[in-house]
Image (cartoon, rainbow, N blue to C red):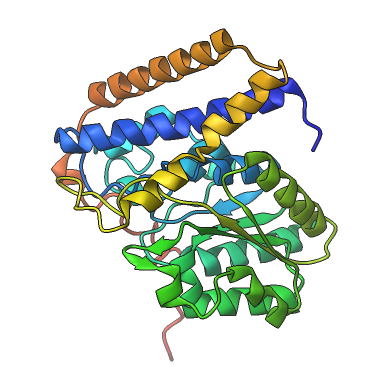
Length: 335
């Protein structure tokens, strides 16, 4: 794939930002400074960045419970994300949603989702909307290997194929649904084999290779923009940490050797090494990127801590849509 040096460096910067954001979130949660469950995206950064590098703000994306990476890759503001984790009013959900409910419609992020497979029908609806709008925009649905066992997965692929919707389904196969290995859940090791049943292209790729992800997504997105229908991309990757953390990190149940093996294929280190080898980046440049990311995150924490907590009296504000009852003239009384 041919990409300009600035574009590649920006992809590296976003991957670093995603990782450092979640590394920091783990520390903040352990320290009791943020609230709710945290589902770290560490190790999977190449998927979100590789896919979203092909999208515009007009393209819509749905996420998962492990959604920080998707939000950042799509262009969400890390200050407002951090404020949401801190439960403050300047957060994306005014401090009421937390980690699993961050959305920014302005950049096409329709939201993370605490329901396994919950984003599949939403993304399908977004793809239908894009088709009706006729502007060449697409939808992308990120989901995990665990969601493939949900009915929504098959329903979404089926109707998207029948209607040739402009959507790309991206399975982040990180080898485990919570603590259940893929081999325990599915009869096939490759999720992409399901694509054939619905008459759409299916591809399994190295989800730790951001350039491979970017190229596969480019092909699928361009196909969708040409009104040729949906595609399924399976990205084989690995989450470095636990499934979810609340008050403290839970005990690790996966084999230590397996974790170490995947960490050797660190997607960030691989891209950085490649750029340095091609003389598109220097060690000094890499250090500068890392320092800038740290500065941005410290600014995000300061922004969050300066924001007030929600007023308990506003608990029902934004809970319901504005009512239209009473705006129509009542029927005339019977004679």
